[in-house]
Amino acid sequence: MATEQKGLSGEDFKQEGIERSKNNADASHNGNWSQIAFDYLIKYIRNPKVKTFMTEDVRLASGDTVPEPPSLRAWGSVIVRANKEGFISAVGYDKVSNPKAHNAFARVWKVNR
Image (cartoon, one colour):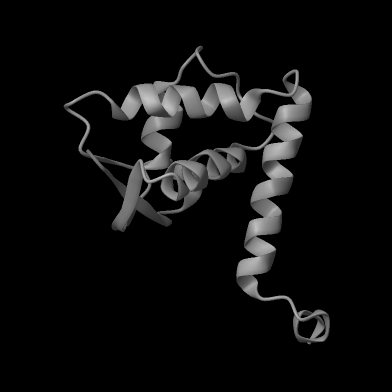
């Protein structure tokens, strides 16, 4: 297999894709899309009513505050950063509400207070 030959894992490819989506979104929005989105996420989770959420909840709530990136996958980089920095933790999976996602499952995140 090509992945074995290169010594890359599925996780490596996932991280590469996340970084590529982030860089593309940043490039299309004056180099700062990911910071704008991250700042919005922090504001979103500071709401005491928000205890758990899915990425799509934040994305939909961001409305006109965060410009739409070329690929919605760019939101993954924002979530990964918040997780790495300890703002949120993964607590499970649930179905997404977007009908175009064909009942796919996505992570549910808990706000760390």
